[in-house]
Length: 400
Image (cartoon, rainbow, N blue to C red; front, side, top):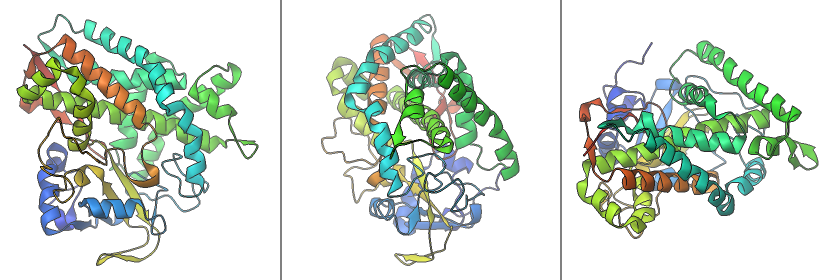
């Protein structure tokens, strides 16, 4: 059953509420001005900081806030389940000091050099997708384009069959959007995820190759190969975080450009501005909100947080804080100083930021070169994802 609608976001917020899903920015603005750390009894107790300084403080406080679960739901994993210190999806769900170890394992795969080697593949993928749209007057930039790019890239990196894209998208929907399902039902739906990853692990053990999943199967920590839960959790993390976030960022950027002719024409005329513009799209339309769990009863700036309360750590709200950003509610595509939090703050900052930037840049370069003029075909038909990753899931664009 869907949660009941929200009557007061300061005391009863819900990030799955229809108004939040459609347009959360006015909600955050109002809370930031009147109740900067909101509270809700939903999901067993949840807090929502909306100011940059509070989001940054919580992100960097690992004594009072644990990362052992980063998706708000009605279920909180126990402190020892899955086995500490790995967490559900290492390294994002790991606390210090294990977090540093788990994160370091992934750095080579997401280094600037490794990402640069994927750019040709990414560009060819974008061009193939656009070839398939060449004769259309209206294209769905989410369904027909944006969602396929990170799916193809992550499949290549992990060594998974690219034709399994629908399976990956189903996993993403389950992990990130169906958080209001009863726990037993949600848990049962994870069985196909476990079976799929187990089958891919078995295949990689039988047929080793040069990809990220084979690397995880062979890499060692202190002379020991990774535990099964570590491999499974990291694979699921890469499928979820590597697909939904970039899909959302590409879609939101195209959604903006479809409504702002001047910005679009500037980028078409001067593609060298894209890297700077991308940082502004990431700031203004940051897709990712993380979660933390309070480790012990703790007073945070007058807020009486209780052990096991959730913290909905909204990096998108922090990115719209006028105390931290000049013209915070405007999209300024040539913004010179842009210390945004789209990739997180603190030690859990996204390890895949280099990859996300490359995919976003190439996706926009290719789309703008092929379709320099476009607008929303039906603004009312645009639909946004629910949950902690926000991006357009239906985005019909009319090609001019």
